[in-house]
Image 1 (cartoon, helix red, strand yellow):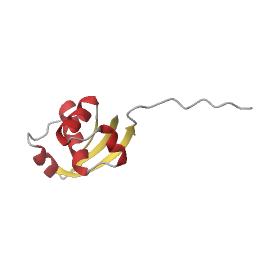
Image 2: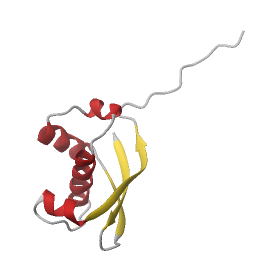
Image 3: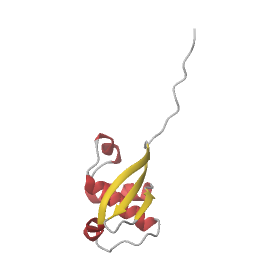
Image 4: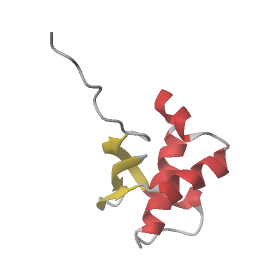
Length: 95
C-alpha cells in the first residue's frame, strides 16, 4: 500500500511524502492494526505516524519525538493512494 501525502506545517512549510512497506509495517507494529483495516478508515494519529516515518525514510528532518512532530503540523492531505494488492480488471466476454 502506497499513500502519497501533502504535509503542511504550522510554519507554512509544505512537502510531499510517500509511504512504503517499511512505514506500513512500522504502523502495524506500533498500533497493533493490520494494513487491510485501514481501508475502513484511518485515524489522524495513524496518518501522522505514516507521515512521520515517511519523512525519516526520505531524509526529511523531523523531531526525535513523534508528539513533537504532530505539534508542528497544520494538516495532512492524502494526494494519492494505491491499493495494497492491485489486480487486473477481470476479462469480459462479448457474445
